[in-house]
Length: 386
Image 1 (spheres, rainbow, N blue to C red):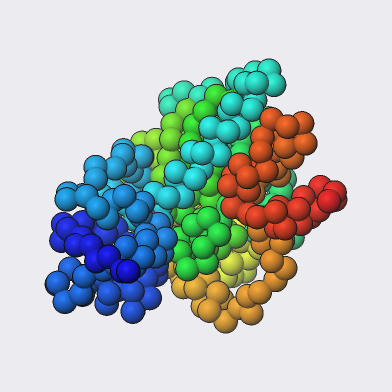
Image 2: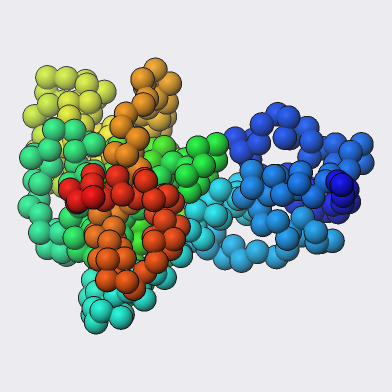
């Protein structure tokens, strides 16, 4: 026997504001409106299904008033935007998932006697950019021209991700919530975030961004960890006037690691003799293995181009990536994709904990958003063991 349950109109309003159009099908959206307008009364099974689809806890649907969720993390956003006054369910659930991962790692490291990481919060805000860059290069053990060994922005990202992970920072990456391919993470809402912790600092990268975007985000968030501050990076086009002093420091650090200023000046002076501004920026982007936006910002800071030109380059970079994404073939090896979401060092730690009986397989599956088969295949991909 089906039991119909009235859901508060306030709750349904709250649900519809929290859930983006990418989550619900048109049929599911129409059903929510029908419930709200009283044209239909949901059954318990329908509410349960809606809870699973939206990611909103089942119990919330039975409240009279919307719950007050802790979303203080949005105060760390790069750009003070109205969109993030009420963060999406996708962002909040991803944040909670990463907090769960971080808590497990912290507890595991404490239990096995690991010391705190000295570089976390080891930098003061009044540091000069060149000194900050020297500190980061020393931490990562890279030369000033490290990018010359890479063939592309993708290769640069993978290289620095491994170095940062080896240093003790957990670098997770995904373009969806958990393993739900219908819950897409929107790069307009956030590109990355950082959760500071002395033992288990964590960076999460939105993989729907371009590799050049992910590369900049990775270094930007690592800078936040060195400063000891959480971060929610939601900068779309490299804003200049709307960001805080801390954000400017982190942007400057990322730019200096990717495009060292004195090398940029040498290369620019040589290229600009033979090419126009746009061609020069494109040529230097190939050399430094990074995106046009970073090079255009370097050129703007040096007054080689005006602000309008800088903005045009930033928008073109986004547009080219979106066009490339639309025409891309997609696909690829499923297990490679799943493995790319998980930090390699974290996964090694997790495998060791499972094999020694400190962590249950069910918890390991939850931590990695996998099942037994996927977890086993990931282990094979990442460590060469079954």
